[in-house]
Amino acid sequence: MTTDSIRRLNAADSDFDTQLQQLLAWESVADTRVEATVAEILQQVRTRGDAAVIEYTNRFDRRQLQSGSEFCLPQAALGAALERIPAAERQALEAAAERVRAYHQRQLQESWRYEESDGTVLGQQITPMERVGIYVPGGKASYPSSVLMNAIPAKVAGVDCVAMVVPAPDGQLNDLVLAAAAIAGVDQLYTIGGAQAVAALAYGTESVPQVDKIVGPGNIFVAAAKRAVFGRVAIDMIAGPSEILVICDGKTDPDWIAMDLLSQAEHDQQAQSILLSPDTAFLDAVEKSLSRLLDELPRREIAAQSLAGRGALIQVASIEEALALSNRIAPEHLEVSVEDPEQYLAQIRHAGAIFLGRHTAEALGDYCAGPNHVLPTSGTARFSSPLGVYDFQKRSSIIYCSPEGADKLGRVAGTLARGEGLEAHARSALYRVTE
Figure 1 (spheres, rainbow, N blue to C red):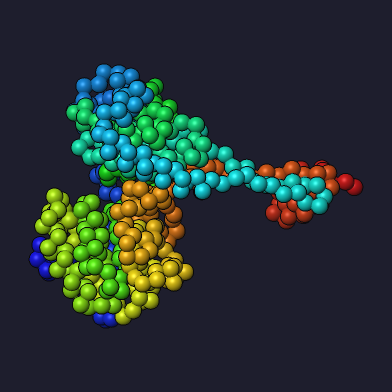
Figure 2 (cartoon, rainbow, N blue to C red):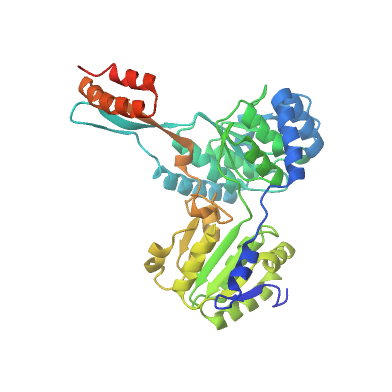
């Protein structure tokens, strides 16, 4: 990698806004060819069930399935994988799961109610969803962390059944992924993937019961399928490429910051790594570190394309300007690598996860810090939040009127209903009014 492979920007330049828009531009899953393919798969699975799932799985994943029972993995297989993996990996998975579970336990919402002076009771009842589907990438990829981050909050919420789908190209399954499923408490596992797996979860088939919500990452076909079935079932989000934005005062080891940027760049070519600093010499040092450290990475070609295409080192006038710029970008991951970072916390309005201090690498959040790593991307942190227990709980309103409450509220409702021209509404309310 050469030193001119990552763009250098200055927030003081007259055309900076245009340059920033170009840097942040990313096309979502709205590809008409992909959407047409996905629509056909969804329709086939919806009408033909297991037969369509088997047909697409055999075609795309090079399997030889004959019946739905063949893609239903028994619970014993999860336990066996847990026993097979090396002790160090099992201990790491269990340690991460314990931290993720402890963090998410604090997110549990409880039902509440209060009684008014006339005896009317109002409140909110919290109930977990019954069935949730988790999509996990498979094949050569190994994402046990995704299993933990998606399944554990659902189990903490009290979801009755967590069903996981994971593709098995050429019949290959990853033991770490299966072991993570065992540790996280996954109830059912199906070795299918792609849009056909999303369709099976959304519509139900002979072998795969319909779920209430689908969560988890996938490729463009999975993302398009999740978007298409939204409304039939709930989904977590349409995720874009991974992102990191680092704000640094120039006093952190430049190698640390460079590697933090590379940790996102190695995800894929569309991942985005941005550094904001008021220290020009520090930006120069990080650029040199990037050039040197990149050559040491197994995924250096992917990281190099990511940095060249969507990375940037941006000069700002101050940390305050960096914070304002960060709020405009609304990054998935935000590192605040400065002295006394908590003084700036109140100024951060939009970020999926905030990593404070020089020693808090974003990679810790990906695996074991505790908070969820399923985060809003592509600026959606302006209105979205990390995946959590609350995503698997529902809220129902409670209204229990006393006779006196029915009399008081009935008069108000009757007047408003007649104002809207809804006479049946008015009479329904007024029938309970004491004359």
